[in-house]
Length: 336
Ligand code: NAD
Ligand code: UDP
Ligand code: UDP
Image 1 (cartoon, helix red, strand yellow):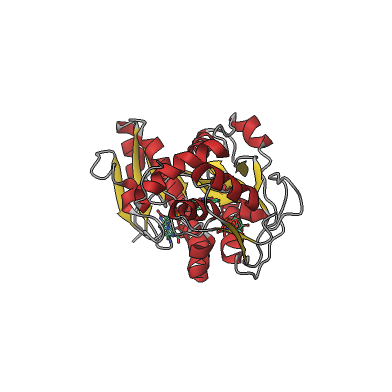
Image 2: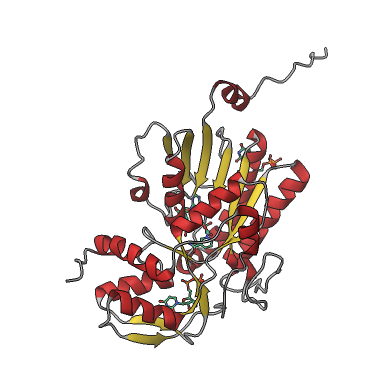
């Protein structure tokens, strides 16, 4: 006896799209540094409902405390390496430890987060027809042989080094994004984020800006890892979040570099922090870690042309904004 074929039931997503005009947005890794600032910005729009999925590895509920209990906000303890079944219209997929000391702590888990986590979020996006944005990284360029780095540069990455779980992991995540786009027609967005700084950075994450500010406030020497001539370009978090939302809302899949092209050596950064925050601290040279990229600066021509985006906050203006937050969290009083 052959069962008669039933027409498919409308999915809950199609139903709710019919009855409501709210945009349901999932932010994975939303309890982290960039994610929580993104959530703040998304929540400003009353048409947005925001769902955060985070396993709290490097993030914290504290970063979201002002939204807990809000009717348009939901927080789920969830590890993206496990499948997630919810109904959403957009996915900002940020979940992944971003600081070298955290992503090297359990490298296999970092790869799983990048590969299986991204695969799951793509499976979810495919099932519900959501647009998905991946926060990839300038680390996909490795130790770059082209300077500054345009999106067309394929990179110089060590596949078996201690950073590979992160940079090769993100490269596979990008590949998955483009394969789901080509094979299944998914609407994708890929951002390649360069070093970002601002309030709520993890104080002990070992990154250079958070280290220098915490050291300056504690009156400890600023640790410049040798040679000190290596460069980075630092983007203030509010500028970055603005770029992510423009990319999501725009028509271009990317990849698009998001970063501040102002380039500084680590010695210059230490001198700037010393001057602005604590002129009495010493600057000392310490040993570096393997595979440290010698220079990094984004070419943001594409972001300017396609998103009308460029950073507004200069390093000298952004550092003091971060200082206030670090003073509060470290319990260090105001300058007299
Ligand atoms: P972060 O560590 O503050 O935030 C990452 C968040 O993801 C944390 O809340 C963490 O708990 C969560 N997370 C980690 N693994 C998870 C898992 N398996 N399941 C669920 N949640 C998980 O880092 P961030 O600086 O806010 O970075 C956010 C994203 O931006 C990351 O994807 C990172 O690779 C990317 N990015 C950041 C920078 C930067 O300078 N901060 C630069 C390039 C790219
Ligand atoms: N997935 C998920 N949520 C969904 C749909 C899928 O987490 O709503 C996961 C699913 O468990 C799978 C992955 O996403 O591991 C990829 O799903 P897809 O349907 O693309 O592939 P398949 O399940 O056919 O391997
Ligand atoms: N760095 C430093 N002192 C520190 C921490 C980092 O001089 O206390 C240097 C590090 O060697 C690298 C740069 O700062 O050249 C940026 O390091 P970070 O870990 O912040 O980011 P990433 O290497 O991922 O760009």
